[in-house]
Image (tube, rainbow, N blue to C red; front, top):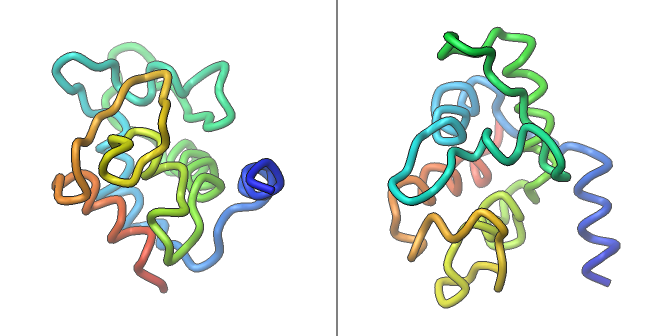
Length: 128
C-alpha cells in the first residue's frame, strides 16, 4: 500500500501549496549547507525521485522558471496539510521523531521542533 502512495506522490503535485512561500522559505533550505551533510540540491539534482534543478556554478539564485520546476518537484513529495505523511519532511527527520527509518543523505533534523522542519511543515499545512 505504501508503494502506491509513494508513486502517487511522484505523479502529481499537491494542490493548494503556495509557490511564493516555497521560493521565500523552502527553496533556500534546499540549498543550505549544513555541517556534516551535503546540500539537498547536491544529491537531489540527479539520480533521485525528488529531482531539483542544480544551480549553475557561480550563481546563487534560481530563475523563476527554475524555481517553478523545484516547486513542482517538492510538491510531489508532500501531502498538503499533512507534514508527517510528506516524504519531504519525513525522509530527513530522525526516525525517533516521526521520520522514516532511512534517508541516504542522513538525518538533517532530530526533532519536529527544529526551525527548518517547522518552516517546511508550515509550508505544507498552509493553503492558498
